[in-house]
Every structure is written in C-alpha cells, then in structure tokens.
Image (cartoon, rainbow, N blue to C red; front, top):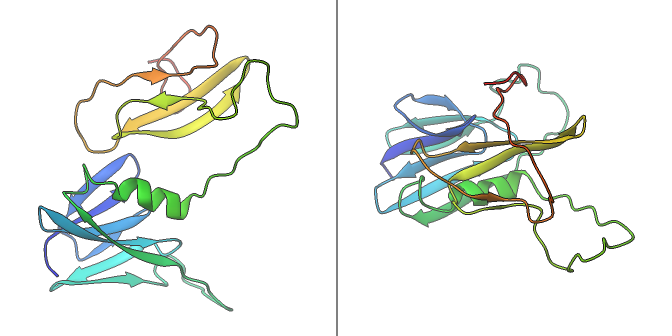
Length: 171
C-alpha cells in the first residue's frame, strides 16, 4: 500500500518524506480518496519505506525491560487526513474520556449537555483548566487552514476573552 505519509504531531497533521518519523497518535498512508491509518497507544515511532509502514517499538525507550503492552489499531477511511475522521478516532483510542458527574445536578441543567461546543471539526480543544477566577482553554486548527469558528460555552453566564501565549503572557 503506497501513498503519501502523514503523521500527527503537536498542533497539526503534517505530510512527511522521512523514512523514520515520530507521531503523537497515528501515521496515515493516503492515496487521495482513501487512506489507511496505523493508530498507536504508546509507541510513537514509525518507519515507512517501499510501501511498508511499521511501528518501532523501542525507539525513544533505550532501556525496555519487563513485560510490555503495545496497543494499536488499523483504521481505513475516505478522503485525506485533513477532512476524514481519523484524527478523532485516534484521539478516542488514545485519550478515553473521563467523566465526573457530581452527586447533585445543577439547577436548570438538563441530563444531556455540553460544557462547550465548537462548530468546526478541524478546531481541536487541547487544554481546558482553571486559573485564578478564570477558565483557560487552548484550541488549535489541525489541518493548516485559516478557519473562522464559533465556540460556545452554554453554561457560562458572562466572560471576558483574552488571547494569551502558551506561557500565559498576553499576545
């Protein structure tokens, strides 16, 4: 199976020509209208040459001892990796949701709700945490395209929005 090799790395999906490549969640061989992804759980290095895609199990771990557990999935998809759902599939494999449900439901809250909604699938929420009297969220656009998006916090009554750098300084 030959095609272009794409990997997801911090803040995006990138095409690469390298034989040996590190990726966060997956490597994808794409032939335009369809592709094949190799999704990994804990072995971030791939080798791709002559149509053969393989996972390198010990690269980046020079001293592997004891029993090891390697998890991976093979996923086929339509379209290129920028518009297919493989990014979300890989994230769901590697980052299972942890849900906390308080003992008492907030007043006016329905049983099914979203804390936040993003209207574009290529906008990724990569962090959500609280600071001093603030909620900090980090988003990025994963396919390298200029995108306008709406982000809705339905349960947030009032908010001031500020753009900050990754280190917390103002832009």
